[in-house]
Image (cartoon, rainbow, N blue to C red):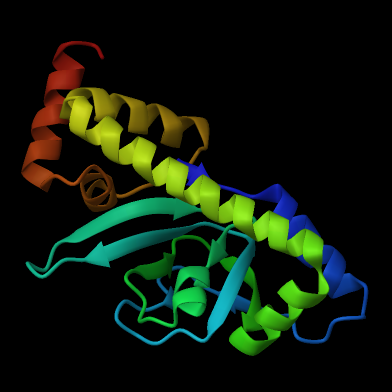
Length: 190
């Protein structure tokens, strides 16, 4: 549920502490702060060093759909940087976040000079694609009660406090449907 990429964050920590690269900056975000805004031009990438954020799309009907929760080592903004497009989602801090920030031109320079980084970024994008496809199929193939049970187990395991609204937005349902599913799960001891 919370995506992490230890390999990428460790690589950036090493680059930052080596003092050979001066284009990596650290930035702190507090709960509620946005790292990325939907429909805005992005010229930076972020690598989360610590903390948790939610990636979500604000739909035309005003509802939000949470695509994923991201944590340590996750790369953000790379799709917009590579495709030179507006951001298709928001990224908002849930907990305090410390992130590495790299501007587009510097990111391309890092990729040119550090071939190992290329491989790490390619793997990170491939994993994102795989996880997105798996989650989409899971939500289509399983009933709400099953998806809710699985989600609740994940947040309990990771000791994460998630609001009812965020749970509903992650499952792509209304609060009313969530309350019904919670009641069903309680009644059926699921």
